[in-house]
Image (cartoon, rainbow, N blue to C red):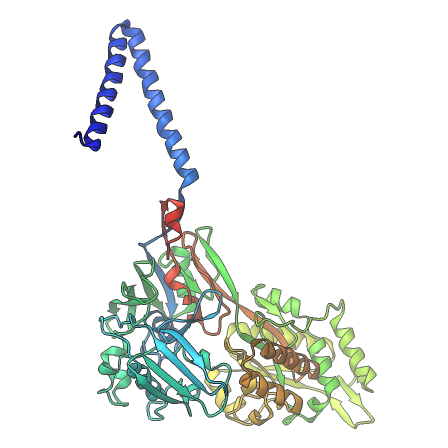
Length: 579
């Protein structure tokens, strides 16, 4: 019996030969000139067929991300501790975010998603969280991630001798390995934002458990970590002084959520912002945060920063600031739109309350007043204040108070200095003599903020992605080390703050947050001014970048495993299986 495949081959071959034989005989019968025309027509038909095929292919095939390519990122500073328990600088946190992975992580939309964990449960009382690890989760050296690695990491974070910046988040949490792939955490009381803390990168216990607290920062693993993140260390280049000049991360093929599309990300480090800006403009680096794209070859991505900046009043240092109408007038006098445009280049959002944009609640509207100074003066006048032009101060005879000179204290950094000068100008228009006092950041913290020695403090609160405002506004946090720098106290707000951090109902937490925003904004404990936008310059050819709300710059890498520089054409049914 004839094989069907063989029969088909014979039929198609013979037919093909017959067709070409007839065509060849026809051409041979033609005069030389007509023969040339025939061959030209044949070439045109073949070209048309090829073009038609490509057109059909273009219509039917779809382009999907493909593996390959290197992104060169510019960064300020130089890394020292690529370790989630020790990372203090942005350079440290950036590299740790890409090399380490936690039980949970954030995606490009800002949602918390399981990473090393496959699932978790929460006890009815909201105090015990139990996580099941993915069985295929491994460190970059191929060894499995176990519950004991998680417990070890948490216990090191809790070790006061290590002085980890993660200590406050994990203090009082009991961690236990129930088996090789199950770990539980028991809290002293319910704390709804706890899942945020479980994004902490996990260390391999077998490599770190023999390292003393004193040697922890100096271990080679602090620069060349073995971790479970989407990238792993490829090459580290140092200068003659031993400082790291460049740091190359390569894709981790065993990353539990799938190999990243990029082959590598190469970091190049600079000492000064100006040097980084020049490198970006010259094309020496392709991406950098905090700087707009230099030319048409790049694009500037923006995201809301989980930070609020304002002038915080201290009635404990200046009694006149205890008067609500004074705080309201000082706040209303500010032309926030002009400050955002002129002092911040438009890369910020004007605000009137303590909750950063992007938190999911309705924000307190910014007054659209044609003359902010006149509106502020009316507030004072209605409360019994009159302006003494000779003495250049506002006087409230009934209360025996004067509103004279004020000092604005802030950090000596370009952005805050520019905003402080703008606020000074507005208050001067209101008739209040104002001085700006600049401090180096460390000096401001130690000698101004901690002892609460200021009338008005231009400062930024880093709220964090969990929108936990308790440390900044609860009445128990008014003294150092609390962060309630406006000496604000309100029992209703205290109750809302406590409920917002303990309630596991997401909608109820948003309702609490909305009420907190409303109550604090109405009391004017600060003249809230702006929430900065996070700027990230990237090459135009880089795709797949999704920026969530940013708490720290390392959050920009939330979707880094999905970034891509290359694409390939595939049939639609194959595209559905793309990562």
